[in-house]
Image 1 (cartoon, one colour):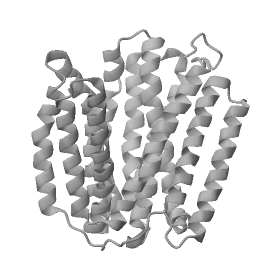
Image 2 (image 1 turned 90 degrees about the horizontal axis):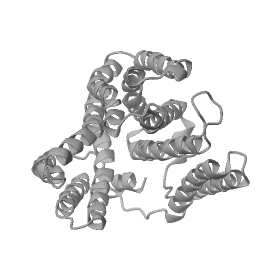
Image 3 (image 1 turned 90 degrees about the vertical axis):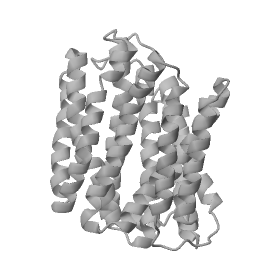
Image 4 (image 1 turned 45 degrees about the vertical axis):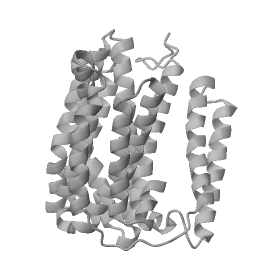
Length: 367
């Protein structure tokens, strides 16, 4: 969330400059890494770059693109991000198998450098940055609250869902969230403007966005594990099994974004909901008969629905905010997107650790 608040305080071009520089440094560090620790540091530096660049991308689209075209451009941005996450593991696997893993980074270095220079030439900013102090108390209380929820879910996987260690940390999270809300309400420089949560047109898409991301990332954790542990398939098959759905979703996102521009938001949301519900119900009905092909097919159906709903819910929600609050809304969406992945994986791990089999009964698998 802190990275999104940079958008209020600094010039966009400077943010992009540092994002690009961090990416270049991270790639070089990873390519030349003599051991795992240096490789990890290089990847962390690249992660900082991504954390700066993606929120900036969304804010630039919302500020520079006319509202009637924002859906299409957000779809293109979503396609690029989705393709990167879809093709990345395959690209890395091919390079590692046939060549040296260091070439993974060396091949992308010139591409990143060119993109950095092009971005610096064209990036613009409508809103003026403001010098405001950072609300550290609010930031810490919110981070601790989210961390407590994650710890609670992890404890559920170890001690069970009825454990005091689960409900105890959940109670701590609720208290910390209340503290965060009170601090934000009484502060002149709120970390996040609480007023955005008074708009139902913002809150409803936010919940949809979080839930489908939560489910999608839970599936990407559970399904490969199911293929390996239950179907006894290899790592390669388990990974490729989900690739088709991810690629189809990435390709569809610009088209579904254009639907938002041409029609009301209800049309893509209704279509997406149909595919999402169909896939989820089908996974439940056919849980005893899942094969690699059936999993791949049902995941494709889910990701088709995902492409209609995910970016469109983000675009619609930010369109309902005034320009000065877009950074706040962007911060909330980006935070919950990342947290959905963490929480979704934690919940899925907890279910596996508690031995929930495909028939809903206790299985022999203990994590």
